[in-house]
Image (tube, rainbow, N blue to C red; front, side, top):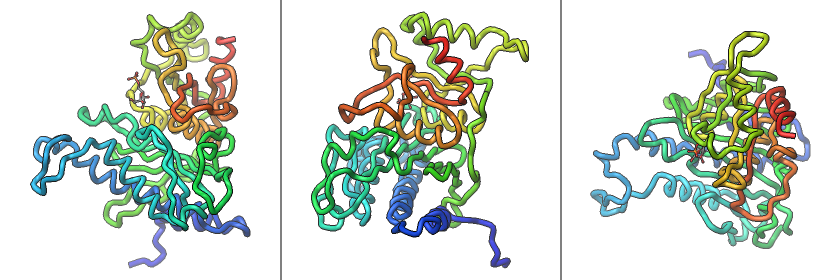
Length: 335
Ligand code: P6P
């Protein structure tokens, strides 16, 4: 057995990155490990979802008399429990919870980070077996240590993010995360139960040939968006071919493809959603931070998503995100 295995686990990688900062305490590495652990529990349950008829769909009562909970509620509870037991998280805000959750034990009150997440984004795709995911981001708290965290800790601009990423539960389960050192992807190796480095230093291509939007909302879009979509559907002078349209309806899946292949993902405002549908804190900020660290770009049409000052936990924003040249092209057509 060659001891010089070439597998680098998530824990080993984050510790190596921490060593680049003499003053680093390793707390961020611990948090990423904890998020990875929670997502392994979620992955196990998501993979069984197809057996719901056998195992009992949510709302059913299993043999132990426990009510089968909805997968997104399960994912939310797993993340809260793991982070509450972590010694490095002061509290969480989740798309599944109306209010933020401050952990009030001594350890947590003295932790310097808070975590925001969408525990199971795209969960409506579970019954068609399409990829879904967990989206997360980590901030340094602004409230004083030793006290419970406050709402201000969660209403920070995306520019302040310390680390952000997602786990995609797809044909393989991958954790992709970004810090200011860059973006790296880790594939779950089931035989050892570890996320192992598989995509080092990921970069979003400057330009792509895919646009991703729910074109079914055409009748609700304004003329600027319709003009851009017509531009995407016309032949490109360079290749005499229009862009390809791909839309999975799960932001993690559509963004993972955009990160790897290039392209642009759009969820605009429309006549029935004045601010679009996607959440600033749990979907747009983490994905915008990650795509910018990979060389891409993200805007609400007027300003970088990461510059927006949040005013409430569940606010929604229009989002245009992906390859830099494509987002710039769109932006030139919106003004
Ligand atoms: P629509 C999933 O429900 C989600 O929040 C994102 O993951 C996805 O990008 C979007 O909504 C899909 O919304 O309106 O196209 O079904």
